[in-house]
Image 1 (tube, rainbow, N blue to C red):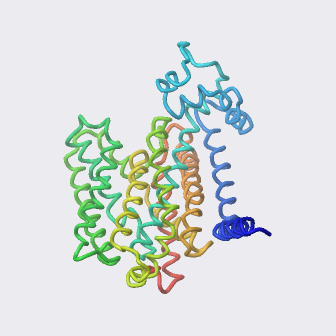
Image 2 (image 1 turned 45 degrees about the horizontal axis):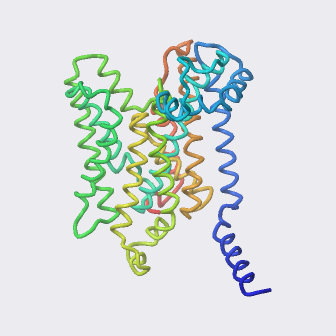
Length: 390
């Protein structure tokens, strides 16, 4: 074998070795099971609604070639009608005709499933990153002040600055990011530490929640109160392609950065002294990865409000299945997060349909995730002696 061929063979073998973890049976099984839950839950979601259709008819609408294979429809959904017309040059006043059922599925029902997938993905990975940064498996966007800061910003906008209501998604994202920066500033003392970050997060979250409660007292309009409750409990009701387009770019950016940062997350878990001995700038890495987590959480809050426990439960479940290697953990969260949120949203729809006898009212998905997450962590506390530190 020639030298060049031998070198190429060695490089190929090394490349395969670096990706060997992707063939872990536990990771593959988790991803396939999660994907099955998303597909089954999505099919249930597109079946429900005022326009009645059977599961078979709903599935036909999902795979309708008149929509799926038409570039104009796909670009309209992903970019909006104006950019679609600019890209394709389509000048007709109306979009190409499709069957009514397919139109209902694609314009009204599938966006809710897509938003649930993206939000679940963001919250799960955000929680996993925060748990590595703080070396505490009980950390989450909620614990570190991101969710509370976003909720407070939303309430301030609705109650005090009502003219900015159209900018609620941006306000939520800025509120979450600002709260975490405040947490980081409070925790800073010649550097930060996992313990100080968690304690500062608890302080900021508690203050923000107290201010949220106070804001309800100043809201004289019952409609404002209901809107605020929907945002602060987390809801996917009424989401459309606008929300998909809003969260998709930030999801792609934050998930890519999370996957690329998995090695640094593993190093942080070794402890600060070990990480420094390996040549890692701990503070820079911690702040950069925290920024990725804040971006992911803020993008989710901007379109779905504050959905509790997803960022707490999913990383813990995935860790129990695939272990603490963050290369596997991040990939597992990319699949398990959407599965939990899609399933919870289906539970919210079915639960309200059973309780109210119709699909007219809808239970916020954040209530369902809270009802699932609370008992799960109570079970963990009873089962594990050393719950907390990773």
